[in-house]
Amino acid sequence: MGRRTRLALAGAAAGAVAGLFGAGGGMVLVPLLGLLVRMEDREIFPASVSIILPICLTSILVTGLSVGIAWREALRYLPGSALGGYLAGRWGRRIPTVWLHRGLGILIVWGGIRYLC
View 1 (cartoon, helix red, strand yellow):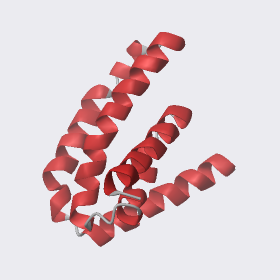
View 2 (view 1 turned 180 degrees about the horizontal axis):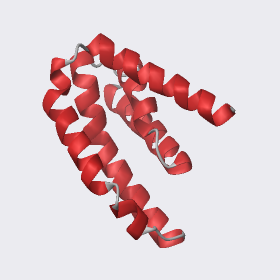
View 3 (view 1 turned 90 degrees about the vertical axis):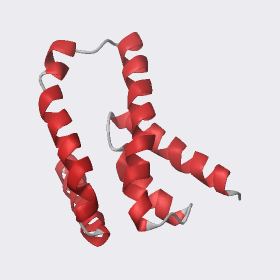
View 4 (view 1 turned 90 degrees about the horizontal axis):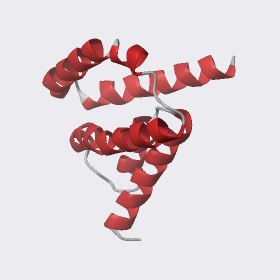
């Protein structure tokens, strides 16, 4: 299987998770970029962020057209999420990749437990 095919599969998996569950595409994408594509650790997180943007825009479009979006509620989170994204983008490279992986793993486990209970 070629690199493009593996990238497409990783993106499709992330898109499917984001579309079905409303979030979490990056949780699928980060491990798949390492496993399927053999991307270097320092490239995985920035690549994931750039891949998630079109997934989010597509999800907004599809959700907005099918069931509508509570924009009044959603916009309340915009300043904080923009600030968090800016700070993470600015300082994220200073965090050792192993700690980013561990942090993501903890979030995945925590989210899984939260949804199971």
